[in-house]
Image (tube, rainbow over all chains, first blue to last red; front, side, top):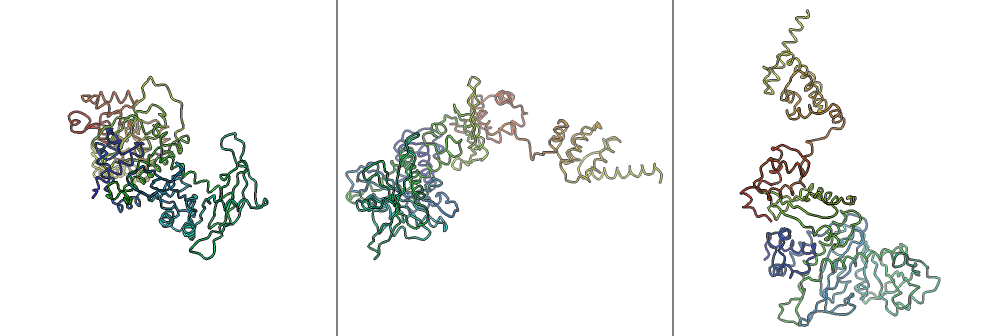
Length: 429
Length: 177
């Protein structure tokens, strides 16, 4: 049983590991920084063995309670734009026979475990997570996640954006989309039969458009857009469902990749090109996965399969530690983005590595007062901005519960007389 | 009723009023001369009209402090309901500053000269100079932040930000990182 103290240390260690970009739990062995120790809730950094043991010890029910308590609030609105997509973590094991799935970045079917997140494309915030073995379909996971999001949306319309992975099984897709107050945009798979049908559309059905090129000053990209209907058959229904289909053809390229098609469920009115632009906002979700992979190191999550299983051909799947690790990584991603929005505009939505280089990896001295923790920071650049941030931080009267509820005081080292005056920067966000 | 009788009656009323007010406020008025007693009496009469209007009470305090009647700051403070320190602060201000403050009154105390963000360099100085006396620390504060202050204010600041333990022997019990 994990006590409250250990649970706190576990969560803080994983959270600040993600914030500061420590690649693996294994690297905790060499972490001796006293500031990092305070951040993780103690006077010494936890060793990798103890941290790993605590992570394996958490119960799934406890993880779910933690997720419920820390889930970002969904603002009250008439409509929410949610993207649901999966992130595959490759598992290089020969001993254990775990399910295979398609790893899109490596472009092959391999042993993977999946993290599926709900992403609010308007606020660019990760909202919910399910960890699963690699062979579970996106439609199945999206159904689970949408059930939770519907409760949190409090009756608002959900506009759900899904990649083609959700359209593999028509039964699962139709089960997912046939919900009240839900509009679903799904990228249609480029199957030969569909492509043949799109190719057979009359010339009058197409509208020519020009889009900006892939880079600045690039020639504009001509595209053709058309609307049609696709009959989607399902074993659960006697009659096929007629799905509104928006087809885009890139006129300057050839091959199957020039075709982009969307199935739209629950919205017959919005103009086709607007829906295409709406669907493209899921790119922010993909970009967040890129950040989680390369900056937050979510792929170093502990395995979901049981490495101590006595049956390597059926090791089972344990959600607890994988879910906790990935959820804390998501919270850290959200927090870093929120922090960047407090900074001047040139740092808005900056990559975590940029934020770490400019703000988080700053040398400092720590002084433990009777009721205070005084941090004397020694930044070299952006001193006016630092002054602004420190004044704001000190006004908030932040207390550190795990350090005898001490008040956090941030200070700057007085500038030396020999320092060159700095170019002024507007510190307001 | 002739003039002398009027004057005598007014004087009797004044003494009764002053005695009553002195008792209620715990102020000894026996050391006041005749002129001062009249000024205090007039001030009390004006204050009954001013009521709780703080800007005008403050203006009255400024006038009394500059009346040249030699009224002490504690007496004026007791009259207008502020501390003697506030009376002295008010007295030291120029007429234009008083007018500015009346037009745009600021609530509460003046902002402290030493801010929370100054605690770091002071903590570092205390750790590096564990034997430093108050005058040396005051000198460091003046040189580093351009702030002049008295010992009491500095002591309050050190207590507020828990910096006392960084000096002398107590520092050994507290782990410093």
